[in-house]
Amino acid sequence: MESVTIKAGDKLLILCSGSTGNNIFCTPAIRFLRKHLRGIEIDVVALNKLSAEVFEGNPDINHLYVIDKTRKFDELAKKYTKVLCLNINATKKLTASNTTLLLVPPFVGDVARGEQILQFVAGLIDKPVVDEDRKYVICSGVPGATNILDKFAVNTDNILINIHMGCGRTLLHGWKFFYKDRANDVRLWPVENYVKLGNALISRNSKIRIVITGTRNESFLAKSFEKNVPGTINLVGKTSVTELFDMMHQLDLFVSQDCGVFHVASGTEVPMVGLFAPTSPLLAGPYPLRQQHLIIEKETMADIHVAEVVDAVFTQLENFPR
Image 1: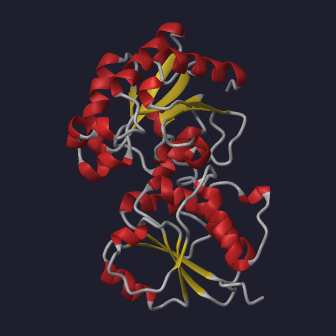
Image 2: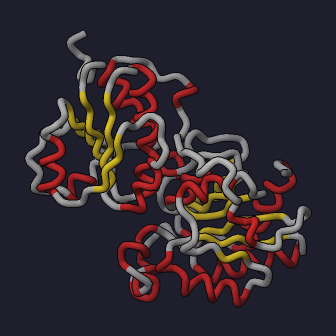
């Protein structure tokens, strides 16, 4: 059909982003291309090493590149018959690029970003999307490798709850972001609320142990949390995306605001409590939304109170026991 833009004989380069979450959103679409065009070569460009971890071991990808310079990207793109951009923000990083792109439209409405990317790609090859296509593709680490939690004195009766209080902006802008600009990021719940949450959960059930995760630039936050919440397992700056993905299978619950690790968690079966404001969870929440996902949505993050998050956590623990 003339409407089919990408075909099996193409050599395809896919430009993604420098964001862990945004790259996770691309994985269903990449899997969709591999499913329907088995003979196609699919290579992927991520804009930094951290976000590239999303694609490590992905069987749908032939080659993975980390490129953040326009000249290098344009040189690489000349080797391909088609270049597809699945995140419009990537073009802001490569503003001077001369490469002709098949560009995903800007995100609109209250439809999951992963779904919008998937539907865009489905239109390019004129194939229907079915429910089995609607899942993230993140690969486990080395088979038989030691679980990262095995380094800690975790008892079999411990209830492990992962709290992720950071965000990708800390990696990009450093620890000063938290002191200067964190309050201006409307998607973030205050760090002191996470500390109160951790203590409230332990007070209600002493078997609970909190696992905290984040980037290496958030280690100063981790030290403060660890000091104030007894028994904390501090994995901040110590995990790759694949290690986080594997760890989620060992947890009883995951709690966070909208961030990259939130989307890693939603690619597993771990029960979740998501904190959302003002971004719509329909746009940026778990994909696909499943019964073990409980979302607290308010107009602002300040409207989300510790007590209601505590209640949500115990509701999830009761409804989805490990």
